[in-house]
Length: 67
Image (cartoon, rainbow, N blue to C red; front, side, top):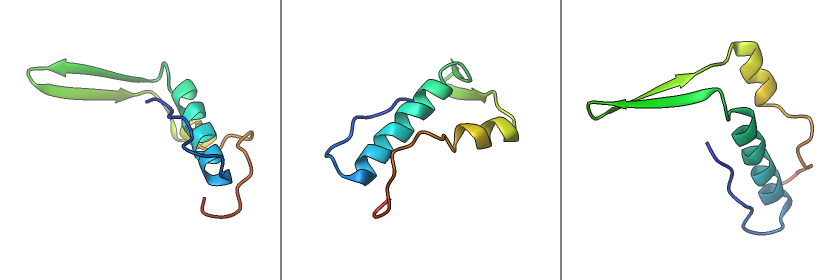
């Protein structure tokens, strides 16, 4: 996964960009893929507790509308 830059300075775009950057960093060494005979196999290395913690970072910018 990879984060994309915000298209504008709205709170929703700042939050989206920060979340995508966080997820790209958090999953950098936990998501892998292998191509074999035309099929892509994905491997994810996370338990439910790990995933919940990754998906709710404490440092996201505040956004109260259109988030």
